[in-house]
Length: 143
Length: 143
DNA sequence: ACAATAAAAGAGTTTTTAGTCTTTTATTTA
DNA sequence: TAAATAAAAGACTAAAAACTCTTTTATTGT
Image (cartoon, rainbow over all chains, first blue to last red; front, side):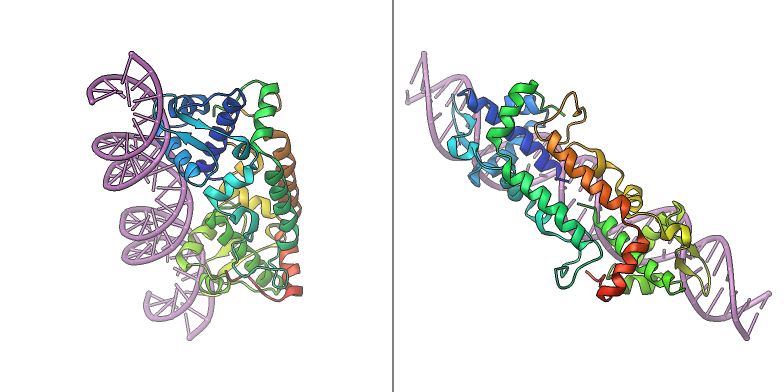
């Protein structure tokens, strides 16, 4: 469904969200441990997301990654778009470039519904919401 | 959603189905042209599917690929499983191995519905059905 | 039996995705 | 202001996916 990069990212972002809810920043080492991802890899990914404004970061001691009101309320869809692009929301299931309403592939109509479902879910689910759910179910983000 | 390999495969299999409905076998060259895939690549894929019993083939002149009653009625899901495995039907959206009902990730419940939708659609849609739809909408399988 | 045809098989190469190593830059606190 | 801390950046390696080339095997029609 998502690229590995994106999977790592969503887990990390939810972890950072949990920490932020507790008013804490968290560093790469802690994040990597919490979501069981390679340290340098998740660092790259978060740096990318930071540049794109999806997470905040500060250098130096007491620094780390965190969410403010704004980034905490962005939907998972934004992370997916930032890393995997919008192909999951738009592309034809059979990889046909010109597949469209007027020129549909054999799976077009049915897949439209599925993609809309995916889109709806990812757009309505915010990091804030995810970190909330987490609190109930016990922390669980390690692969 | 699917791997490129799988996208090529589904298009090719639908094309072979169309031909089979007309009582014709079709060769790699013709298939590759029809679905706009690299000849040797689609050959490999169809050989694989042939070994797995999802399409029939015969060597030599008058040979080629075709579907019999049985292969024509298999669902698209079988092609996907044969090439991409069942991860699209089963895996956790966040890549968590132990994600389950009792140990759910933050997206678990919602994604279950989506995956079920995908599963249902791909299981109910047969090659036969796809090649039927095609007849109405004009041939359209080139990427 | 032999030439032509077409799939099967094996062993590549290329490209993309995933992941690592090393150095630099910014920030804090003693 | 220097040492410690932590993210940023750049350049790299490894693995997987996508795709190609070459040879072999099976079948048919003459």
